[in-house]
Image 1: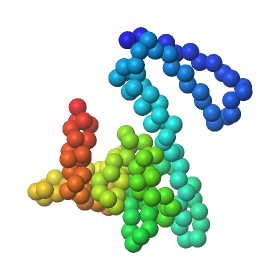
Image 2 (image 1 turned 180 degrees about the vertical axis):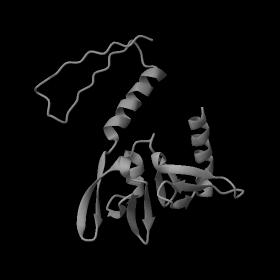
Image 3 (image 1 turned 90 degrees about the vertical axis):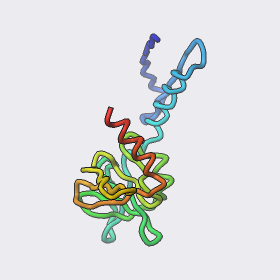
Length: 155
């Protein structure tokens, strides 16, 4: 497969706008993968607003260890503490970079870049240990997706 990339700077577009035109001889699985990758880049969020001690902070998503729910509220955990967020976990799951974040339970989405280890010592359970010393259990429903993730990362 040969791919040609042409870049054209268009001053009529807004600063945060990019227009992509794809020309192909036919619709193929390879073409669909390219489109999905482009869409995943454009759908991803880079920052999120969190509140802590009556102040708002703009947090870089890559600095977040995990997102979780507790007592009807949603939070994110960073090295600088926990912040309350307004977004729902299902909304975050759709917009976070899929290569960096994985849903480990109904109440937690983990950043794989901040995972220190996977503890498989308890039969039937997986405990994720984060770099900050905290840990979260993987729900039984998510074990197969975590194992698939580990197999893919191992290759």
